[in-house]
Image (tube, rainbow, N blue to C red; front, side, top):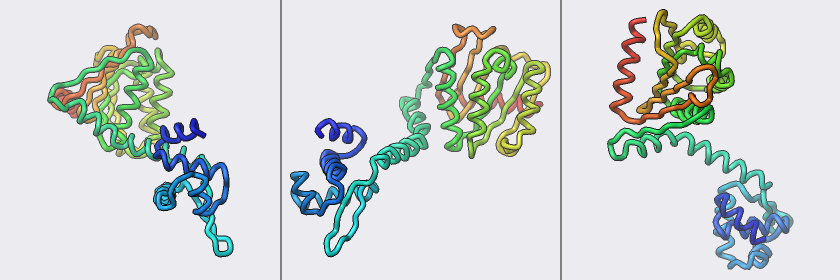
Length: 256
């Protein structure tokens, strides 16, 4: 019981909430008097804690005759609460990160290595886009298609799952880049007003993709020939840096 209480506390319940919820799980339907006795808590305390558990949807009640009986809702409910709290946290995470990164006014730079770093950067960027920030992408998609197909699959899957976002892409490179850009334009799942793509001819942008979201610039260095040692991501956060990068992107976008 003590181990169970400690785990429930780690999952967000207070000590008394964990005790009473645990008693309800173990004994099924009980009256308030029985619950106070089994939990070894004072009756006024039990009333208060039961009200808190009720607000979280963790208990149920039923009247039998003239008595009211209480029982615990299935423990899966705790998992549902955790998922809900996590989704709420993810909604404000980009704002919290932005405040953290620019608290002293200095740009912050982080470097991540390998495909794991690319995926981490993608998640952060798309979380920021989901909260309303426009994404500006300039890159040679052909390198990803030919050398890192797993990254492309993840990118396409993520884009397909986004419900509300705004992104503009400037794509350059060879035939595979052109074909990808044309394919994306014709996908029914990609709303054209939210996802605009332009392919630019005769543009040598190297093997580094750039993604600008809010005050953050994601720079992906993809190396060559699927060499994992040459894959890394630089994340730079700063209002001034992002403003300059965004202005450069807009100038290229308007010229295409």
